[in-house]
Image (tube, rainbow, N blue to C red; front, top):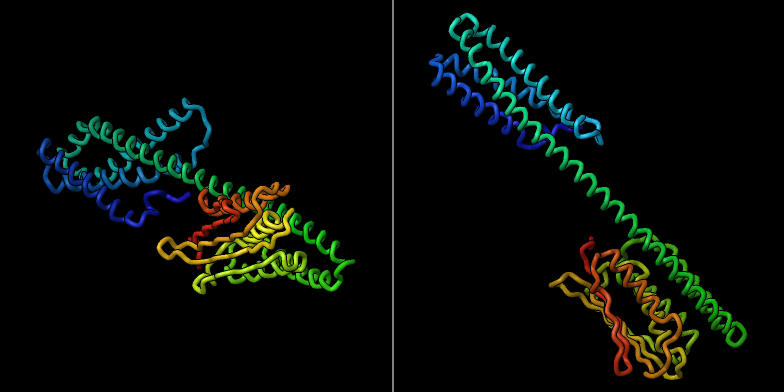
Length: 353
């Protein structure tokens, strides 16, 4: 486990400042109140402060590696023993070092004994503050690990939801397409063969990009044109497809297979139970001020006709996918009025490469 102080980019300056301030304060105290020579006072303060810093730095390891989940009384006892051992170690090591260097001065030796209670209080105060700081670092580290774990779990949940949604959409489209092929096999065999070829290309694309998060708009629109060709074979002149895609949008990114359910919904909403030709119109443009791709898919429909069963399922799936990917609820809007049904999509380009 890395030390929280030594791993900081400014740790060397922090340690030097800590040692210097404590050494000067201790030396000034000894020089002013005990009339100790300034050189001896500075040497005493430097030694005691250095050992205080070294012992204090080592306290991180019994705290950082302490067993978690212990009872409060056991934690308090553990911390008390740490402070006691640290205090005794500090006084012994620093005292022996000062005695070796300054022990020839009897006045200093007597002074060291007299101020021992003050040193004890000082050491207890310093080590308690150091331990509180270490416990704070430990708490922050645990909190950060929990946050990162929650983010990983949320990402895994979103990925699972996306896979479930895609698994629901692909069989739904395949079922409709196979029904269309079955209907054309006897009446229009050439159209059926063409539709099978188009369907094979479409499914190949679907399988290839099933686990791809983002794909360029020009590739996705190629797949949409393939899908609309499949449906045009089925509906003939009743289905008209038009698009206006700005050239600046070609390389913009969006989730793979995100558009196909919208077109499927447009066809189902506009053509089922209706003999009126339906025009599906696509408009794509880039909003540079927001760094977003804006898409609009519009189809006409006959008002008053019952809504086909299952219509709107693709829109709900698309909305859920967008919400999971971008954490926004305003990325899909659908409005129908005056015989026109419009679905508007907003695709943020935060992931744009």
